[in-house]
Each structure stands twice: as C-alpha cells, then as structure tokens.
Length: 156
Image 1 (spheres, helix red, strand yellow):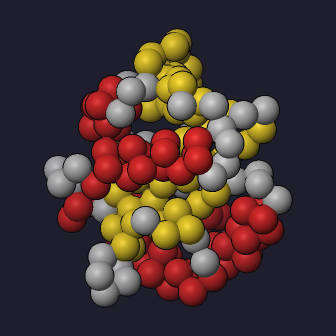
Image 2 (cartoon, one colour; image 1 turned 90 degrees about the vertical axis):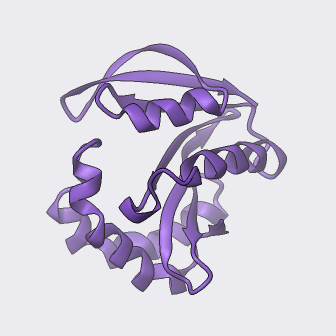
C-alpha cells in the first residue's frame, strides 16, 4: 500500500476503467464525469493530503499495476470516512481486508484519528464482510446514490 503520488496516475486510471463494470455491480458508479476530470482530480490529491483533509492509497502488484484503493476522506475531529475497492482479478484474495486493517493502523498512528466511518450498499455483501472482519460495527442505515445501505463505525 502506497500513499497516492502523481506517477500512479496511468495505472490508477487503467484500474478504474478496467474495473468500472465490476464496481458498478455493487457500488454506485462514479459516472462519466469522473473519467473526464480524472487528471484534474488527481492533481488536487497531493494538496488534500498535505492539508490533512484526505489520504489516498493505492494497492499495487510488484510490477506497479494498481489492484486496489483504500482512502480516508473528510478527515476532521479525529474521524474520517473510509473507502476502498479492489480489482475484479484480486477478488477473494483478502486484499481489501488486509488493506483496511493496515489503513486502520495508519489512521491511528500517523493521522491521529480515533475512529473511522464507512458505508456499504445492502447488496455489497463482500464489502460488508470486510467491514465486519476488520472490527467495524453497524450503526445505522443510509442511502448511497439512491441505493439502500448500512453505516459502520470503528474505534481505533
């Protein structure tokens, strides 16, 4: 797991494009605008990280291919929102579980966070299982881009 850098851009964009349909089967689609503005969005990430507002991580294979993402966003008052996704070809290999565990440790040690929030759509059974395995507790219900979902919290 590496903190996002500008040189990750080509591999990250390839990851997002190659897995778009896979992701859309269980999470709300990012939409065409995400891809149209990808370079602009990526240029803003280092400043967000330096300001302590968000922390974006990529999970890479030895050759540099991006296999997943794990992010902390909306950091404030000791809490952040956790988001993660892994490539279809990495599914079932515990990549997301390992990444979430590692990010929980980093969030406490390097960011000084005391808790993380997360959400998953009801039909995203794999993501809900990752949250359960990594110590997140269900706290309520929500809607994610119109889809029913659940909210979670984990004390660090």
